Length: 259
Image (cartoon, rainbow, N blue to C red; front, side, top):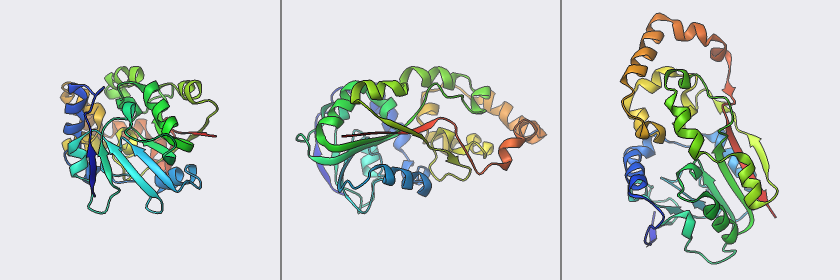
């Protein structure tokens, strides 16, 4: 991995810097790309040969069969990129340091809710992408899975920062939106990845790689209730239908704009 440039990270608050650097510790080990989600993203990228990955983190979901350039604001994330990862610039999506139509496509994976200016970020991606934009995001109008029953603050945190899907079309023009069901054994440890593995949320290492938990205050009470429900069998009884499913639609969406 090569750090090509370090630009002034403007539009990026001290709070967000701390958040990225906090969840960045150990991120590469806990947020491994899931091959099924990876395939969905690859298909959405179509025949694009050059791709910009914004909010690239440690390199998850970066195609290996295309020329990829990464952009990431957090130096902690950048340090964890593997030596053979795509070359990376430190910076933010709101001010991309690239020429117009530089790339065939631009992609963003589970990052738009961290941007300081959603519209500016999308317009910058549109400026540098010749063919298409591919965004994996979460639909804030979708029903939340069972974790919100224990920690309702999750909904209060997510809904204000997750852009509604109609905003993508307002800014970019016509888009296609497809559901991305999450496999029960998903290898990427984002918030919804453990919907069939509730015990994972009790692990502080797992929570440390999930931005939502980094923004929550003390969750020891709700987690103690979850532990009790797991021990008593109450969780399994209430969620028995989940244990029979191989994947679940819990609101993750792939948004594609092309021209």
